Length: 176
Image (cartoon, rainbow, N blue to C red; front, top):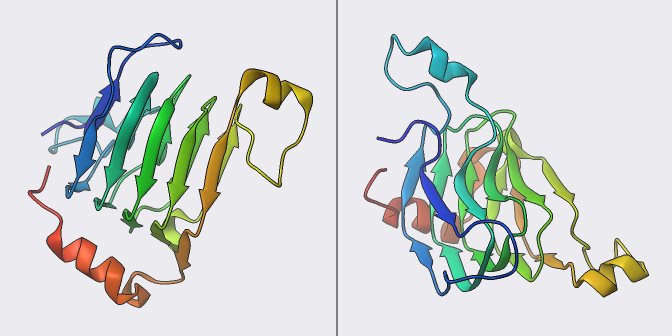
């Protein structure tokens, strides 16, 4: 088991990409950044990772129908520096106090929609990306920074997930 980051999709920094059309779907991902087995106290201090982590441009890539739970900070859906070309949809994020359900650090051409998250991870942070209708300016247009974030569903308690989210949770596997 990986104790720092469970699923990494990493191309590297910058726009030049040899990685594309990656699909990460149907996984049950949990206990990310939790420190691992008893006795690995140093692992409790790991930071800057996530359940689904990307770095660099990867056009045509999709992360969908994953169940992400019982994770520690940073981000459940985490797009780090220069991440681009991802479509994140129909993921369920639960039971992860202090987590950002969405963390974008300088991304573009990202689409994040139809995901479900509960009150334990009811935070998001978008920096270095321009979200339509919330950020305007010539810098965003010139650099083509964009993140289309829409139709994501907040659920006050894990027990209150709608039927579609519950089906995603049940179908997700194997456990990573």
